[in-house]
Image 1 (spheres, helix red, strand yellow):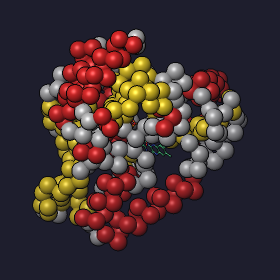
Image 2: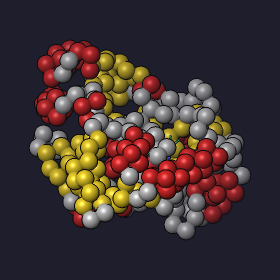
Image 3: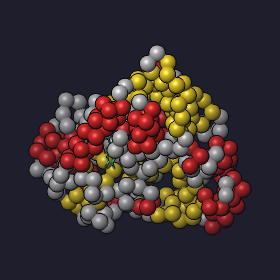
Length: 311
Ligand SMILES: Cc1cc2nc3c(=O)[nH]c(=O)nc-3n(C[C@H](O)[C@H](O)[C@H](O)COP(=O)(O)OP(=O)(O)OC[C@H]3O[C@@H](n4cnc5c(N)ncnc54)[C@H](O)[C@@H]3O)c2cc1C
């Protein structure tokens, strides 16, 4: 964007939120678990719905691109960065509360979209509610998890979600019921819309805390044993194809450890592409292309990436 637009944008953003919530030229490698990516022209963390609405209005009027980021754990940012405004919901969007204490053996937890999934599952444990154990250890936010319909070990967001409140790009707020959420495997209505998730409510069953804790600890142990948690990544690179596992297909295509530049197929879990240190987005994209080509040649299955680009 040219300097004139940059100056105008900064002036307008400064009217929308406090100066400490705005950063210019924020390196996206600091904001993604892959630790890859050039600068975002502006990185803004609104603290309230009103501030968010104001920022949306500014971007609409000035015709500037806006990308909503959660914890950046399913994202690849490009080396060229993002020539627009990256918005991350501030701490005002991270509240956790029980709205409906105990109702016929269930309770309702409402979580702000900026809350981390691990915090949410710990909160459910504290309250004695089952249904979110799978989320313990997924390094994303509630917003990112609803968007992706995140899941693991047989659980997924769609199983307990009862409503989602979102803001449309025109600033209006709408609440959706499960029927309207269009949840499928790593998909929700938000995958095809540009609405911003503000909060989500989950109906959970009352269960003994000792059993909830045991499940969570079991999942944590399994993650530590199977996943390359000591290396930067964006989790599973590809969606699970019908009737197969992406990791197994990649491994049997002889690609475990295969690398392009500083991006590699993890030695520990072939379903993960990892950053060996200084990987570029170009390294990752070339490696993804190569994996897809090899797996298609060997198994006649075209893998579909699960990770999304900030573009
Ligand atoms: C080590 C590791 C393990 C993982 N394990 C799992 C796993 O077991 N299961 C699983 O499903 N995933 C897993 N993931 C992937 C990732 O953590 C999940 O997809 C997570 O739900 C993404 O949340 P996020 O906040 O990081 O979203 P981001 O990566 O920041 O964003 C993902 C998408 O959601 C959108 N988005 C985020 N917040 C909002 C919002 N408030 N409103 C609208 N859109 C929004 C973004 O625009 C983007 O398109 C793993 C990742 C890593 C690095």
